[in-house]
Amino acid sequence: MKRKVLKFDQEKKLETKEEIVPAEKLADNNFFQVTSSLFLVSELGLSIAIPIAGGAFLGSIIDRRFGTNPKMTLFFLLLGFVTGIMMGYKIVKTLQNKD
Image 1 (cartoon, rainbow, N blue to C red):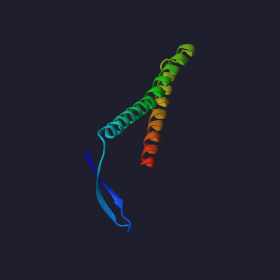
Image 2 (image 1 turned 90 degrees about the vertical axis):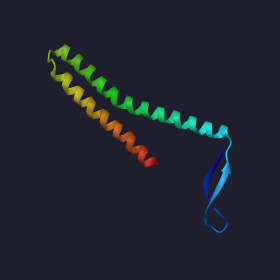
Image 3 (image 1 turned 30 degrees about the horizontal axis):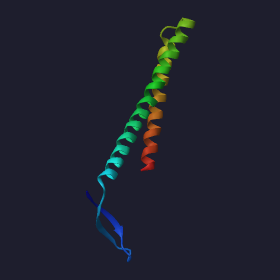
Image 4 (image 1 turned 90 degrees about the horizontal axis):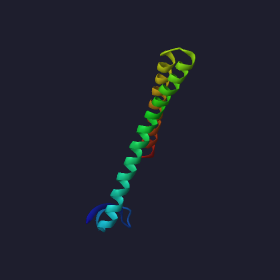
């Protein structure tokens, strides 16, 4: 396969060159991009879902123990939601700064 690449020549002028790239190299690069995207989506989803589920779980345990139904469940669920959104925002912000 051919691809176009921008390179500087000896006079430091930008020029376009065509390179021949083996198909195996492109396939490896595509596989890496797909797997890294899947890991990113998984990390983002889990960083939002786990605090929400943990907050609901912790709140229900506290509610059962102290008989405060459903106040603590709602409080910790809301706290988990805010925490999850903040963690997701941090991940997205880090990715934006990396690019």
